[in-house]
Amino acid sequence: MTKAFNLSEEMSFQPHEYVMDYARSLDDVLTQTIAQYDKYNIVKGLVSGQYSQEWANNVPTHFMNATRVNFGGDLDGQLSTFEEAITTGQSFALGELGLPYAGYRIDAEIMFPFYEICEKYGVPVLLHTGINGPFAVQNMPHWRITNGDPLHFESVLGSFPELNVVFAHFGYPFTNNTIYMLATYRNVHADISVLNWMLGKSLFHRIISEAVEAVGSNRILFGTDQMIFPNTIPISVENTLSLPIAENDIANIMYHSAKDLLNLDDI
Ligand SMILES: [Zn+2]
Image (cartoon, rainbow, N blue to C red; front, side, top):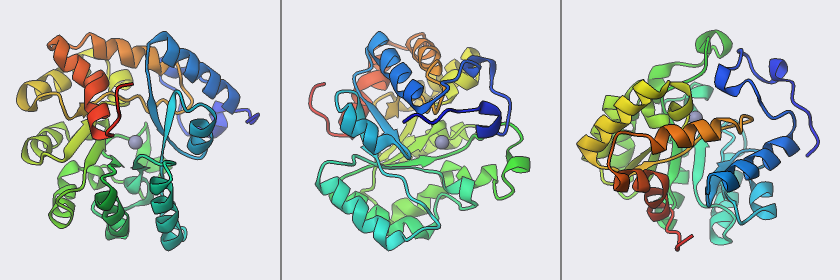
């Protein structure tokens, strides 16, 4: 936990002005994240990545682990590890699955055995949909934004009708498609991570307030996807709390939607 970051090496693009003040080491990411959670009364975060199990083990008051998949690795081995992690309370979701980053469409069949496990235990899958960073295709030759269009997941829901899915980043820029999927399938959810700190307040507010008017708020979830940028947390919270929607809708987005999806007791 002492590895230092150099943003020019870690990232392939210049950081947005909001995230200039990035955490300089893994220790800094953790301590600054905990400080922001406490400041903004964030009672639990679902985290995924290389260090998420360690975070959840060491700071269970703040973090829950989700399981990522290495698409080029031993899928059978990862499948049994995932099932064991669910049954032993070490994992609460599958994801974030970054299928478009690896050149897959979000309906890729390589994930189907994992969806069987998700359905069996009532565990949701969090899919990366939409958005990438600047110069996406120059930096990632396999990347195609259309591979992350939420409409592609419709066929998967035909095969896994009880699968709870969360479209990360509200599928931006395919937000009308996300709203259609939310309206049509009761097991579809969407989070507002990255949109709430990257798009600017006006566009973020327009998209989410129109979505709430159209489909309600109880399957829309707050998120940040802050990576090594804990200072995006205040912006995400403030832009969400100031949404031009009813207070109970904001409460759903900030708390109840995720609590219901993850079957959490009062926290
Ligand atoms: Zn993502």
